[in-house]
Amino acid sequence: MITRLSLADQQRAVLAQGVDISPRVAWVSTDIVYSRGGALWIVPAQGGAPRQLTVLDTARREVSHTDPVGMPGGRVVLFSSLTTDAGTERIEAVSVDGQKRTVVIEHARAPVWSPIGHLLFGRDGGVWAVPFDQSSATISGATVPVIPAGIVCAVGSGSLGFQLSSTGALVFVPADFDSKSVVSVGRDGSELALSLPPDRYGMPRISPDGRRLLVQSQGSFIETLDLLRGTRANLTAAALGTSFPSWTADGEGLVVRRFNVPFWTAADGSGKGGPVPAGLINDYPSSPGPDPDTILDVRVQPETSGDIFLMSISGKFKPKPLLVTPAYEGGPELSPDGHWILYQSNESGRPEIYVRRYPAMDRQWQVSEGGAVQPRWSSTGREIYYRGGPHMMAVAVNSSGAEPTFGKPIALFADEYDFGEAASIPNYDVTHDGRFIMLRRGSQGSSLRVVIHWTEELKQILAAGGVR
Image 1 (spheres, rainbow, N blue to C red):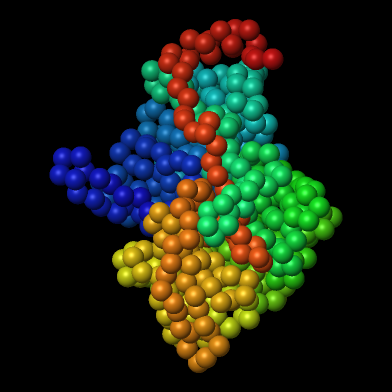
Image 2: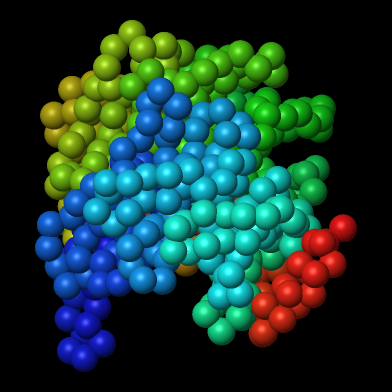
């Protein structure tokens, strides 16, 4: 959602719904450009009907137009075009009327306009520069590296986290900004570090047999840790937008957002896999489905916000809506016996945790009170966990009868751990013996970096032919 806040009277106005999770929106004169459904849209800042600006090129396997940047003059927007093929990302330009679209530079992303007449962009983990004519939106001359790889952090869908002001100040996200440790936490708060070095981890997931831990790392890999042997392995090659992994029900595969769309990957490291048929950029895998061919998914839709779908990994059936309402539903997970589905919804005006019968989905029961997010079943199905304010919470549940019954919510340990990319899909998991796999942020690297008058340094770097 894009909302305008008036500084004069503090009044808010919703300008657009169904906005993609994207690193940027852009001002272009009196309009705002943003990403929706993978494409770029434009809406007047004072309100009005949004208009689609770009269309994904399916022949090129485009999945996302992101990182919009408005050029001075308000007639052209630069953006990143991402595909499902590594190394084919490029920067393009589109006129604000959507009539003209041209390629600016190949193998590049995250455009940033420099007031000294250069286009800055991300490539191979570093920042590069090339002379740029803003009136024609064309480059000339050689591209040179100006910030080495490993300095600036990749953010969002794989964009580099840096911006340059019109006065020449550089602001960037350092590479260690999102560094975290993977820890095992007992119900009493006792904490043990796992044998994983600090990294940009997210979404830890215990395998169905309880032996392996799945985790996204470095913003582009999916890594596994054998909890018995302590060995590590990468399951996927580096790819932009790698996030939201989930095991399949049999533990033989996983579904993950890769290049910002759902992909299936074999869990044996063979590299087998491919895009999930009918998967969209607005799909976020959440947890295993009732069988190895299915996955529970949160689909963000403009009309109904977040909805819960059942997706076939092989494409045997079209994505099946399980729960579609005006509220935001997310974080779905089936109970161990497969008879109940746990999820989060804000239908009451604040997020709470609910349970429904599966697959009937005919009635719901509220589990939490006072606000709650990121629910999880215990491995036995006799407890439900969620994040409730400052604590991890637990609720006893008896689902053996016609209706489930719940105990009083109890606080377990202080929740000082990372919440992750999504409000509803848990950024933690629970082992079969009841320990919580959490992510603890490091004490260093949690601040943005600012370099005043960086364009003066940039001139020197360019004169020297770039950094070495």
